[in-house]
Image 1 (cartoon, one colour):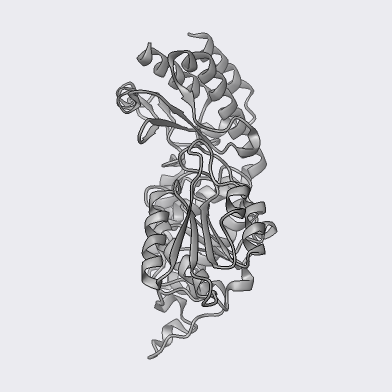
Image 2 (cartoon, helix red, strand yellow; image 1 turned 90 degrees about the vertical axis):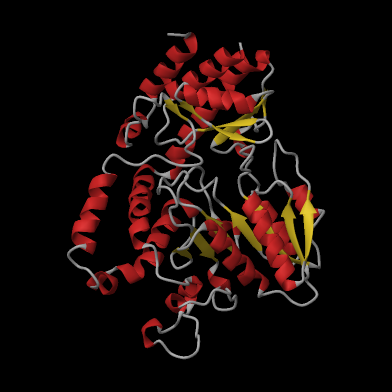
Length: 405
């Protein structure tokens, strides 16, 4: 056993959350280290029984009665549970529905429904996740608006100074990711939101890489709108439904464009015209994905049990250890860290860049070490605090060093 692996094993023995890794389905023999929890979280060991109970009882026994008994309330009830566990938001402002892409579209259009005619610019950064950029470009085309692009440092992300120099009296909406999907850089959401509000515009934060990994305080930050996915650090499974947050002050003024029966004030009247339901329910559209919410509910319960402070402490310990090993073993081989070193701006994953890293990632997968790759030359080490062991981090760095050496 190498020194790095011995240190990883020792950190695992002293980890306050060490027992939680055993609560996830163990990987098969082909996987030795899983470092892509920031793309797809692992399932809980008892999730199969939870799913079976739902199928056999809630669905199989109650059948259509399930809608009247509980399912109609799930989009709001599960949203409230997530808000309390991970979003720093009061009840009545969060829904579970749709995909992240659909919710970005709905909430961006809702935010823009509040604008005055002279506000004709949407501010977005060039390194935001592609779907965010593609969607907002399409919305700008639909509404005849102009995009203002912020150029960011790829190793960092959006900063208050950059935002302050860009927003102004023509800004209709500001959209950004709270954590950069490339570098893991945490934006100062509170200060940026304040700056955008001072310019007279609303904000829409993409929380996909932060929810479940770091503490969030949407209400205290006075955020207007936010979205995020359920399949990364929330461990909701492949294609898990997303969540949308709409600040209470906007709910009865902002109008989302996908008007469906589930968001109607009286959905079962099936009337000729659309009348939005008061509050957050008006941001629903079609029938909620109830079966897909079962794993998400289960994972939210685990986060509630552990608490975001403990999760964040483990996240920082994992990324500290990763950076320590990267400096020792990989930097001498020509690898560069492309993520923040300071705790204030470092999220739940770290990115390293180097020549030929696409081939390095392929070789790692052959060896049973699973990070992911972001073009042109970045390998992301996604360290999910509840399921990742320190020994996995050590093994991954050792394997990268062996491939490069």
